[in-house]
Length: 107
Image 1 (cartoon, rainbow, N blue to C red):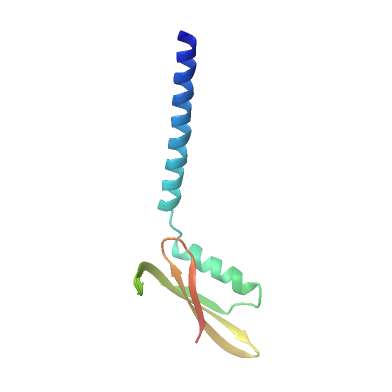
Image 2: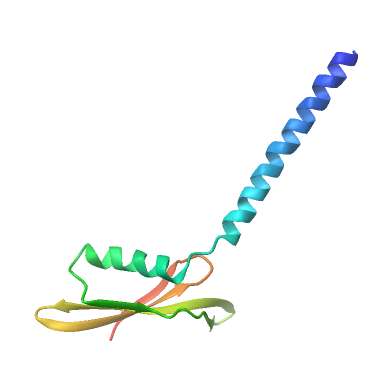
């Protein structure tokens, strides 16, 4: 009976450790926010699949954005490339917390 209690205790400690590991892993993932340069590189890779890029930029400072009831911080950036012999500019908006591209529009 004593050995059963020992094994049960070890099992409980092991399960608690696994559960704690998953919790800490989720927290660390949320804390690791993408840098502005990582976001810009993501957008550049997507544009490069279609055509060469002439230039790109991203603001290094977060800006607040509110759209209806949703509030977040964003980075603004842009891409310039030639399309049909003309220089065309695009701007994009990326969520500063997740790196998700919220909008891309042609100027």
